[in-house]
Length: 91
Image 1 (cartoon, helix red, strand yellow):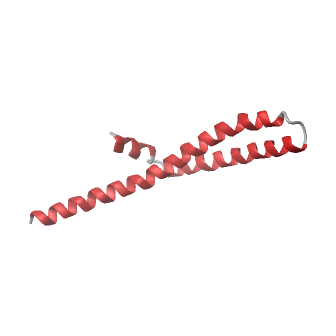
Image 2 (cartoon, one colour):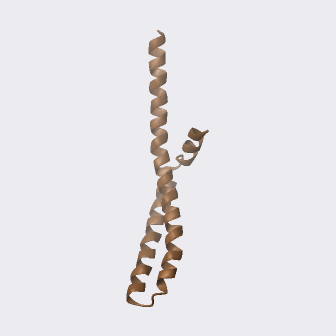
């Protein structure tokens, strides 16, 4: 069951990379709002926090998809090596 979830989550690496870069871009926007609050009105920090948490969630989801894609490649390579070993051993 877990491997099916990993395969489904990592099935589209381009989409995951897009999510990751979008999250990083929104994170940079949040840091800009924090910097703006340092030089101007401190209430910009609230806007920075409001933007920061969704940015981290989006980037985290994208990173999880990228990791799942790599991990699914490892799982499939392990399974194919195991099948090759079992076929060679049975002969």
